[in-house]
Amino acid sequence: MFSGFFNYDNPVWRFIGKFWDVLIVNLLWIVCSIPIVTIGASTTAMYYVTLRLARDDDGYTFRSFFKSFRENFKQATAIWLIFLTVGLLLACDVYYFVRLVGASTMRTVMITIFFSMVFIWVAMFTYVFPLQARFYNPVKRTIFNAFFMAIRHVFSTIGMLAVDGAIVFLALSFLPQLTIFGVALIAFFNSYLFNNIFKRYMPKEERPADMEMRPLFADEEEGRPNADNPS
Image 1 (cartoon, rainbow, N blue to C red):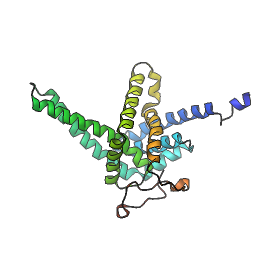
Image 2 (tube, rainbow, N blue to C red):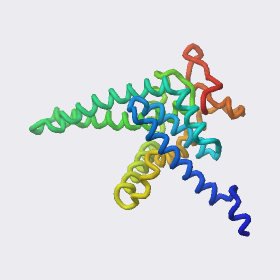
Image 3 (cartoon, rainbow, N blue to C red):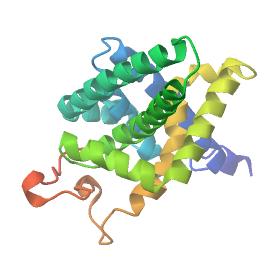
Image 4 (spheres, rainbow, N blue to C red):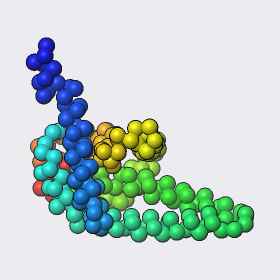
């Protein structure tokens, strides 16, 4: 009985091992995000690892992280800078109308519009880096796919954001121990839902593990899948 319990293939140890990997990924994400401009690449690499963990597709955490970081650096950085710019503009607009003195119909309408845009931005931001980690597409197509999926699966999106908020709340209040897992813990839980969503857009035919990267709603002239990219 004890030999079976201490077997690494035991579900308990595999579960514990995944959280060890999440801890390592979080440390890698922090270190690789220090330059700020690299946050997009490090977030993509983080999701590359957590998506694999959620699929029980174990591998070498360090190697997988830096493989994705290197191969997705250019596109993930472009996506990050686009979202950062739009996010800052939305934040300024929301701040301006919230701080605007006096109640008026126009102020209420503009606040509602911009908060709706903030929700869409957050939803797209939640999807875009997992998509970059899982599929090969041009930047424009990846951003469109993030919008498309966030809206099409809006209830899953809302549920995911609610769980993310609950994790942050628990980490900052009742369970500060969760902070050692950082954003990688959120990515890990999100990855289970993302795998179920992404599965709907994968071709039915089986392909080798290193050939899983493929376009999503992409036209042939927009780019072809790169078999060397992460999946």
